[in-house]
Image 1: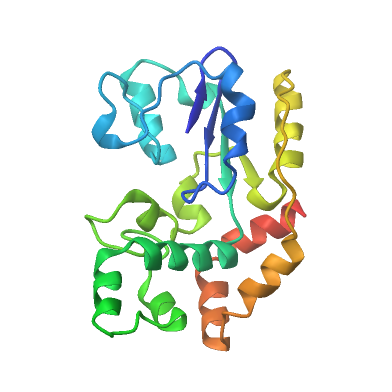
Image 2: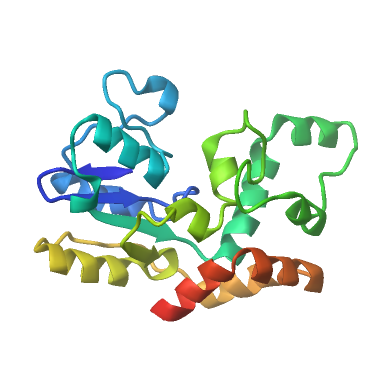
Amino acid sequence: MLISHRHHFIIFPDPLESCHWIRRALAPWVDQSVASRQESKGKTAFFDGMTPSEVAAAFARDGRDFDAYARIAIVQNPYLRMAQLYDKISDQDPVWRFKERLGVPKPLFDDWLQSTRPSGNGAGNALSPRWRRHAAWSADEWCDGRIDHVIRAENAMTDLQRVFRKLGIAPAFRCRSTDQHELQKRTIDRYASRSIATMRKRYRSDLNMLSDHA
């Protein structure tokens, strides 16, 4: 998360932080300390992974007007996000890895997807890391009506330039280009018809949002 009190903006990265280059580009304008984890926040009230609702509450406790800031959220295409979330859990979940060593295969993507939820504990439980819970949330659940600029992760540089031009500052946004068409093709191949129906139902707001910004 990135906060500038001087320029009045807050950026909420997508829970899987698909756009790492944003932190480098905005470093000169950021003036609020943000801890990397909730457990290490120390004297700051802010840590990476906070929801917009949590930040609004922290601002209120500090006597600041949350609504006076440009509130910017990075939203990733849900098809790509859920595939990446599955891969990250597969790489890092100790239970999945332990079972694999015993010869028990990890859950099939389609079965795993059906077990997740677009709110609450998302793709984990109450003790799971925030990225695991929040990455499965729908855009409506994550933004909670508190965001006024939605940025598409897949087109973040162009979208951010438009927003920051209105704020009167010009960060040097640079990101390495990727073959989005090929990446999306490999991703969509994972989804069976049942999974596609589930995604359309759960993430209708995300998909409409991305379509409206296209």
